Length: 394
Image (cartoon, rainbow, N blue to C red; front, top):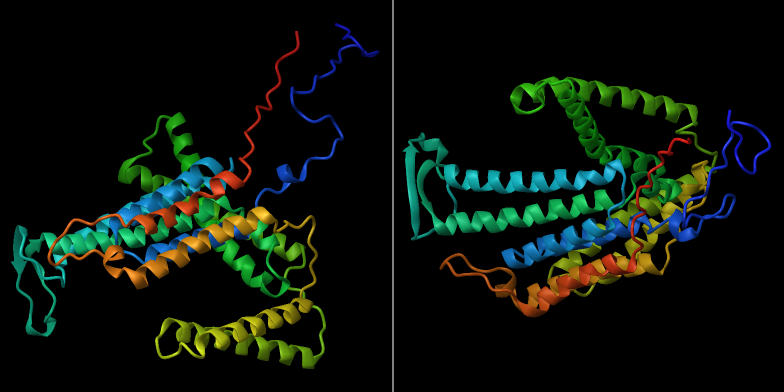
């Protein structure tokens, strides 16, 4: 048995630390532990999605998709739930194809003069007025369907970017105490798609190693049952873990505090709805913004009081630092400038289809969309996956 250098005991070897790695026992830097606040990623992605709903210009929508995709490509962490972005892209493509298929088969309400082809039309009874199956397919109708579907596809891709960039567990930890139980349900729902995709990939890889088909209808049916079984087992384990940790326990608060909390929360939500309606309509320009601010203040006060009922503490909470403000502000600026562009130049953001004209790229709205690239430069890069395999000792 070989005796190693520097060790008084035979058969033991002293492992060398990796080059560039911190020494044992050294504190891990804060930037490497926490990263960006997950709420900032969600606010940035939702702001980009809001900007996508304000335009039907395919060039601007393609630019929004490119901006979100680039940020995901350079800042997506090496985690299983971060792989869900590809599934959202495929879902967006499916929505796009399905919308075009509906426009071809069921027709379009947009009149057109450029006939592409004509399908055999199925006669329908008199009570189905306004609905047709088959018939003439025009370029104007297909273009309108393409613009409308591309807007929904861009919104789905922005939501997929938030799922790929933000950690669901860290997002749940950052919620206020009053929203903790609701946040658990939302986080479990948000992690359904990433976990489902991970299970499907794992089972398909296992079937390929065994020489069994993993594609087509047969492979889908044989993979679906194990995936469903794994989802049920995960839900049972999650319920047991939540019960063991005392999920649902509440503290005793005076009845007056409970009534005040309910009144503030309900009144605040009503104020937010009324204020939003006033801001978005021309008639409510005088009272919309004050009512909206009062509703937000009342809702925040209600959440603050409601947090007293939740018996929970936070271990090492994620800080909302300057980078989180920059990421959130970049998305908010994109959404605000697109709303402003829609009010000043509606023709540039909503190109016409009757008569059919080629869309043009408005310059300053396109420059506004490029502000959404800021997170790719101000946020830390994801940590590389380290190879933990050890070389055998001679």
